[in-house]
Amino acid sequence: MASRQDEIRALKGAEPLPSHRVVQLRSMGMHAIRFEFVVRLLRSSLKVDTLSIYWEQGNEFMLKPGIESVPRRLVLGRRKHVSGEFADLWLLCYPEDEEIKRLVELEIDRMVEQAMERGTPLTDEE
Image (cartoon, rainbow, N blue to C red; front, side, top):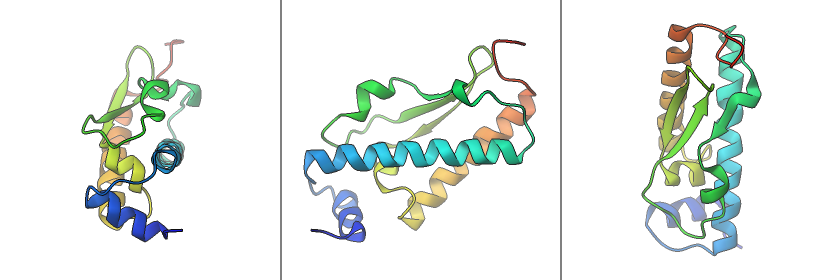
């Protein structure tokens, strides 16, 4: 069984991993990124409906067996939405790869900043 660092090297080197492992890593990355976004929003004191934070077309791409070049969109809100784009490779390697972790966190910071500029709440109850 390959270590997590071996898997990251393989993914970054465009070497294939078993389909079930790609799906598992993508799912873990999606949950980790969403969780980190929620935590940062809460720390910013914004009033946020966490149910309105979702991966656009998440059910469609979560089970893809291979790496795709299409960026994935994480969305906050419904009417006054904020969104961020995350490369598929970022989902697969976050948070273990330091370079990718930095890129993901920059995008999350940008999203939080944008949410703060738009004010609260970011739900349909506005």
